[in-house]
Image 1 (cartoon, helix red, strand yellow):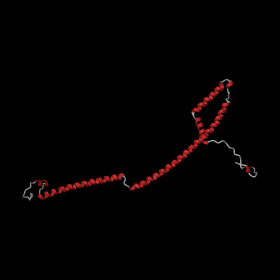
Image 2 (cartoon, one colour):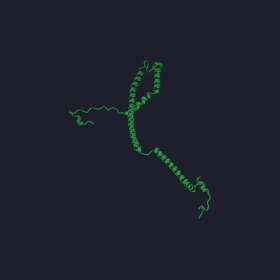
Image 3 (cartoon, helix red, strand yellow):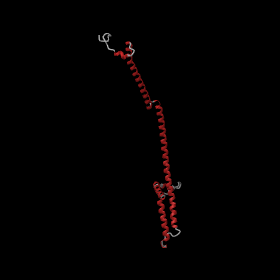
Image 4 (tube, helix red, strand yellow):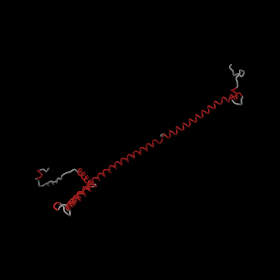
Amino acid sequence: MVDPRRAGRLDQPREPRRLRLPRFDPEAFGRWSEGIARGMGTANFIVYMTVVILAWFAWNTLAPAELRFDPYTFTFLTLMLSLQASYAAPLILLAQNRQADRDRLALEEDRRRAALQKADTEYLAREIAALRIAMGEVATRDFLRSELARLAEELDEANQRRQRLERRQHERPGQRVAAETGDADGPGRALDEPRDDLDGDGPA
């Protein structure tokens, strides 16, 4: 608001008058323009426009002269089509600009997500490399299986050796008895001999 004391002074310039234009919501106008552009870009609009123009031609050609409102050369129709084209072009450009802005925002979001995914992938790669280094000297499942199989084979071999040794130990007493009795046929026949009191085999 202009100060009344300042308005009367001649040594100071007046504040410029500002022309106040009506305000509107750019977002709402943009949505409206996109709706019109989408409607004009459909087959229905072309069909309806063709029907209107044909009806216009038919009425102003076949109707009585006093009822024709736009006789031939159809000046009024040309004016309406020019007016429509003059408004359609800016509306279509506005819709394209809004779509380009959305595409730019979507592209920036895709780049941001791609950068985050790349960072996550690099982090996971580093973690996997660290785990592989840490697991380098840790026994794996296959290694444990191979070691257990080797131990099982060694235990089987040791059991077989122990069984052979026990059989040999069972065979050695019979060989000693055969050597003492002088029987060349082995211990089996010496053990088959009947016991008598003269040999000292009987009870005392």
